[in-house]
Image 1 (spheres, rainbow over the protein chains, first blue to last red):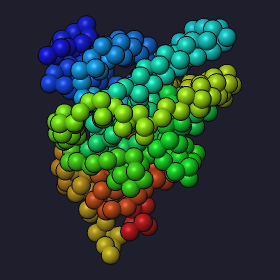
Image 2: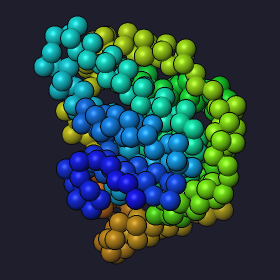
Image 3: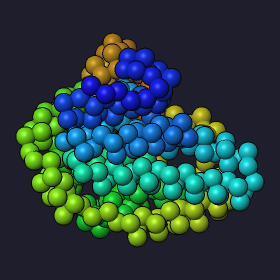
Image 4: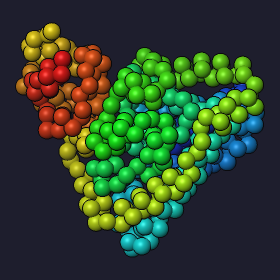
Amino acid sequence: MHEGNAASKGQHSESPLSWTFTGGVIELALHRAPCNELGSASLAELEKFATALQLMQSDAHALIIYSEIKTGFCAGADLRELYQRSQAMEKTEAAKGVRDFLERIHRVLNLIDAAPLTTIAAVHGVTFGGGFELALACDLMIADKMARFCFPELRLGLIPGFGGIPRLKRDLGNAVVRDLLLTGRSFNATKAQQIGLVSQIVGEGEALQAARGMAAQLRKFDRATAAAAKKFIKPIPHEELRREIDMFCELFARPAVEAGLRKFVESTDAQPYLP
Amino acid sequence: MATAEQTLDEILTLAAAHFKVPRDKLRPDDDFFKSLRIDSLQTLDLLTKLENHFHVELPDYELQGVSDFRTLAGKIQARL
C-alpha cells in the first residue's frame, strides 16, 4: 500500500487531505475542518496529489474521493481566506492572485477529470460550490441520502470558478443548469439523482462503502478499455473552462464582490449558507 | 394528507431525534436555531431530513427568515 501526504493515515489532523493506493484503488480523503474549505493549503496538497495521481494512475482502476468530516463533502472555496488575502493586497495584485489560484485548481481538476481510470465522488452532507465542482470532475457520484448540493456563488456576485458551469453543461440539460446556477438554491440527493447527477443514493454514512464496492467491480475490467470508453464519452470542455476563468476574474474585480465577501465573512446570521 | 398539526408534530419529533434533543423540550413557536443549538450547516441537514421524510422539495430561499417550527411546518404543508 502507498500512502500520500506529509502525515500518515490516522495522524493527519494538520493536513487538509491524504491519500492511499492499495489493490488498484486510490482513495483521496478530505479532512480539513470545518467542512474541507478549499484554500491555499488545500490547493497545495491537491497539487501534490495530482502529481502523485499521474504516477499511480497507470496501475490504478479507480479513484475514490470522499470526506472524513461529518458536516459534508466540501463547502467550497475558503471565502474567509479569499477575503482576508484580497484585503491585504492591492487590487491588481489580488486579481492576479485569484487568477493564479483558479489556473492552479483548474489544472488539478482537469487532471482528475481526464485521468485514465474511473473516478468516484462519494459525497455526504454539504457539497457546495467548489466542493460540488470537485465532485463534478469525477466520473460517477455516489451520494449519502443526506447529501446536499448547491452553487451559491451568485449571492457573492460571482459565478462558480472551479469549472462548475462547463462540467454541469457537459453532464446535464441547460434548463437544469440554469435552475441550479441562477437560483443559487440547494437541493438534495434525490433531486440530484432525478436530474442525472448522482448514480446511486445510499443510507447515511454508507457512501464510501458503496464507492468501494463499485471500485471492486471496476477492478474486474481491462484498464485500457475502461480508459478508452471514458475518453470517448467524457470530453474535457477546455475552451469553456478557460472562458469561465476569464469571466470569474472580470466579475471578481467589481466592488459588489468585495461587499458580498465581507458580508459573508462578517455575518453573524445563523443562515449564511442560505441564499 | 396530513393536517398542519400532524406535520408540525412530525417535524418536532424528527428534529428532536436527529439533533438528540428531548422531544418534550421543543415547542412549536421555539426558535429552532436556539432550541436545537444548530448553525446554518446543520439547518441544511434538518432541511434534507424533512424533505426526505415528507417527500417534498423545499427551496432553501423559502426558509430565509424562518426560525420557528410552526412557520417551517407551514412551508412544508404548502408543498404536500
